[in-house]
Length: 261
Image (cartoon, one colour):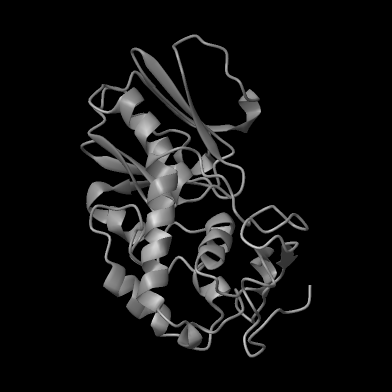
């Protein structure tokens, strides 16, 4: 699933393509909005919050979520699409650009005044201009017994982290992902590291994973083979994905040393 940095950069591309321009075509390929026509409306702005994207006109906010396989691509008018047309769920065209949302997991059209309803349940946006580290820390600490590897993935605590960056943050902080939140020695520092990592990924070079996807490869710190494990609890087991870590640098809670691979 695309994470906050990917969504942030996607919003930048859509902003460059559409912001300040008048729509010459809109094609909603979802039944609920099949008859909606936004031709003639000016795109006021494009923005993101966590993993959510918003394209705003004076009257509505088009809310999309990429989910697992969604992607926005921008083309020149008349340019052949580089993904199958049957996967397109939304097309927004201006005079000099055509933005196509492929395999979008969610397409929703909201009144501008109601845009907040799509994100009210989320924690602070790690890449937002009003990022609130103290609030993110408070939300994490409100569930002291939850493993940090699950807590970081919960968008109600802080918005933008997915499976890649929870692995990376835990690795960088030398914290085993099964460690209960209450046992994190410096929770504000871990939150600050999450913000630093996602900000660097969004604004710098493409992130080079230190732990994610490197099962059985040597740890870049100590050389121990990295492992991947599932964390699970009653609320997350069905959607849980593997988290990568170093069993030496990130000892299992209660062991205090190297945990078995």
